[in-house]
Length: 188
Image 1 (cartoon, helix red, strand yellow):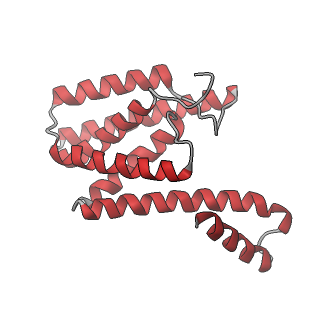
Image 2 (tube, rainbow, N blue to C red; image 1 turned 90 degrees about the vertical axis):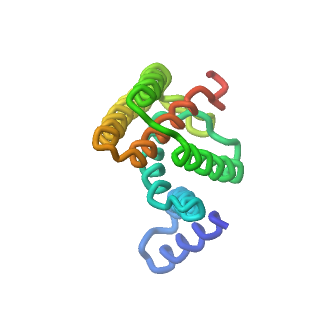
């Protein structure tokens, strides 16, 4: 479905002389990535609506995606499995956000363990996206910066007693860190 939609959109762009036919495959790949991303974000939002936690699902997703992108970790073997696992991850995270009681002690334990994992393990490659040495350095740097920034934001939310917002960011950090423990890359 997404592949066909990407092809249809790119074919329209080619027919309207917006892009050249020679670049079509590159644009199809990019459009497919964009549509996958959009579909996953919309699904997370729908799950949030079902759980009566729409803004929480958005905040969780906004915190989770950039950290996951640069830190890496487990990647499912197919887009379909990835989608199902992503739905499960969002649902479990929202349940945890709803049920979890957060205090400074728990906050510091989760942040400390997560940051240690990010600084020791990130980035964790995927067999579908191996990284060269230059990319590894850049991804490591971005993962560290994002982890520290999001940890600070979660801490500010906790300090301001915006506990639900704190839990959303905290769970995004925690889930991203946990996925660093698993790799589908053969050399890991």
